[in-house]
Length: 128
Image (cartoon, rainbow, N blue to C red; front, top):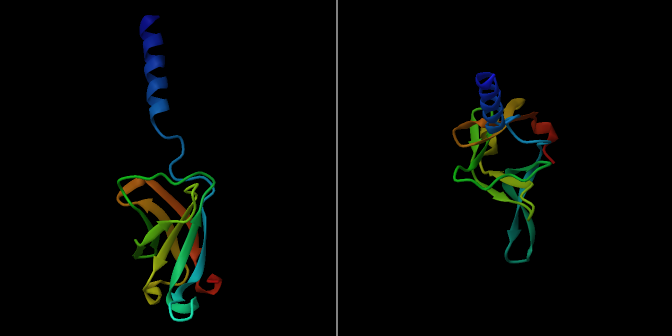
C-alpha cells in the first residue's frame, strides 16, 4: 500500500510540474501599416513597414529569451510591450516585401518550442 501511495504522490507532483497547455490563452493579432512621426510638423507620416499588434488574455512574461513573431520563413524580432499589463506586444517589420501572403504565423520565445503559439495566417489584404 505504501508503494502505491508513493507512486500516486510522485505522479501527481510530476503532473503539476508540467505545463497543462503550451502557449498563451486568447492570443490574436492585427497587422497595421507602421506610421512614423514627422518631426518637422509633429504629425504621423506614412512609413515603409508593418506593425503586428499581438494581444493575449494573460500577460506575456518578461523572460531572458525574447519573443519572436514568425511569419512564414521571416522572423520579426523588433518588439516592444504596448501596455502596462503586458498583454500587448507590438512587433515591427521593416521589410514587409519579405512577408509571404497566406503564410503561417506563430509566436515563440526564441528557441523554446514549448512556448510556441500558433496564430491565424498572415494575409496582406487584412493589413489595416
